[in-house]
Image (tube, rainbow, N blue to C red):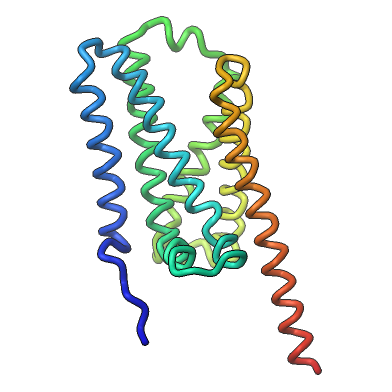
Length: 209
C-alpha cells in the first residue's frame, strides 16, 4: 500500500510556510500604529518562526530513527523544503533588522563587532546551505563536500541559537524555555545519530554471520 502524500509537500510546502511567515509579518506591521515597535515585534516573531523551522529540520532524522512514524518520515522527506523555509524566514528576519536599524539610528552604533560575529557566521552558513540545496549545485561541489557543509552548518546554527537564547536569560527568564528546547534538540540529535550507528553495526554483523 502506497503512503499517502500530504497535500502540501515539496515546493508547495515551502510556499505555504513562506506565505505564513509573510502574512504574520504583514499583520504585525499593519496592526501596530508604532512602526518602530511593530518592527521590533516582527523581528521577535520571525526569530521564533525561524527557530521552529530549524528545530524541525535539525531533529527530523533523529526522530525518524528514535520514533518512527508517518510524521517523522514526512519531516525527513520534506527536510530540504523545511530548511529552505527556515532560510526564507531568516531572510525576512534580516530585512526587518535592517529596517529597524534605519528607523532607529541608535541601533547599529549600539552593536559591537564581537556581538555581531555569531549571527554573521550563522547567516553565512544559511546562505551557503541554501545555495547548495539544489541538484545542480550539489553536483557541482560533490556529495562529500555537500554533506560536510550541511552537517557542520546545522551544528553551527544550533550553537548560534543556543548561545543567542542563553545570553538573553539575564534579560528575561522566558529565554530559559527556548534555550532548554534547543539543548534538548541537540541531545535528541546526538542520541539519534548514536542509534543510527548502532543499527548499522547490528546490520553489518548480521551480514557477516
